[in-house]
Image 1 (spheres, rainbow, N blue to C red):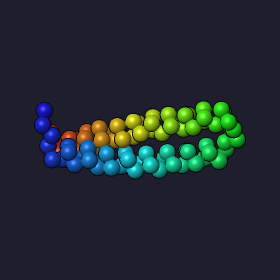
Image 2 (cartoon, rainbow, N blue to C red):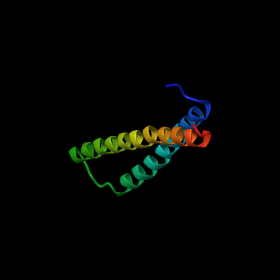
Image 3 (cartoon, rainbow, N blue to C red):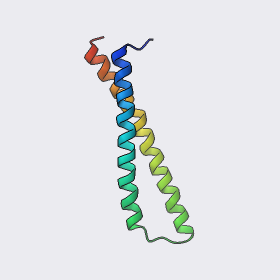
Image 4 (cartoon, rainbow, N blue to C red):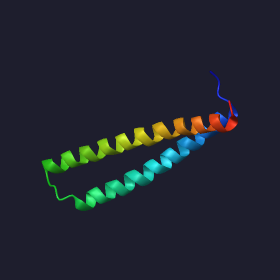
Length: 80
């Protein structure tokens, strides 16, 4: 399987948009969660762990899925 130019461009654009979406989405959600956080001590460590997990899930979902969608759009537009 080889990538055509439109597929590659679509995947790269998808990757860029996925990274941008990740940065915006994780920043907004993390900011809101931190604003509402009232935990202390051991509870605080659990909160930080959940923040890291949330950011990891958002990263995989956006940076992992957007290039696939971009690839498929590039394939569709190129008519291959």
